[in-house]
Amino acid sequence: MAILKAFEPANGWLSNTELAELTGLPKPTVSRITANLTEAGYLRYSADRAAYRLGTSVLSLGFVAASNRNLVVLVRPLMQAFADRHNVSVVLASPDAGSMVCNEVVHSRHMLFTLRVRAGSRLLIGQSALGRALIGSMGDAERARFLSKLSHVDPQTWSSLQEQVSAIVAQMKRKQYCVAAGSLEQGTNGVAVVIDTPDQPHSYALGCAAPANTLSVKRIEDEVAADLLALRVRLENELSVSSNSMEL
Image (tube, rainbow, N blue to C red):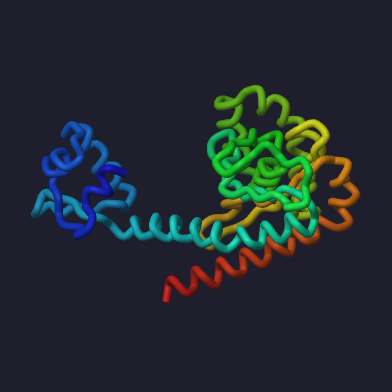
């Protein structure tokens, strides 16, 4: 990121020597990074100038960041309304290695006890409905790669999860949501759906949880899951409209 930021604000042509001076990185390190960034399309190289400038692929990074901000701004009041209506905690999360990182968390204003999570918290991917929904939404090849990485990053989670993968995938295909009973916290039930953003499928998971005595599996199936699916559709539609507006 230091290399990319060095081109701000004018995006002029910069050589490896100039980039090394601006970033404080050793020139061999800069040369290696600029070669990789050029191959990925994030930098353009001019042989005549022996210098680089930002490539068009950097625009996609800006769009992803804008899309993420748009989603959080859009979803927070809807999450709060959902939490209050169903007396639950609601979490928007995204995957990072073997965890789901909580991007936004809201709690019902009527709850006596809430989940011990907040924005920035990490949830083990195999224990939460959020992580299970994500795994269940992947294609076979993507899921195999993901679980292979998980087996190295977090062998314990992978070991406890691998026997349940088939059931998780079947549930997501059949219902488009995933229910987790008591796997995140003892006595807590949860349900989650996956949100596709315009630039990437299953970018986020959106879910809710509450003590099992107020959020039974039957109540999830009869009432809460349908509302969560409707919220997912609304968010995906509004993100699509926002994306089309940015492209015009």
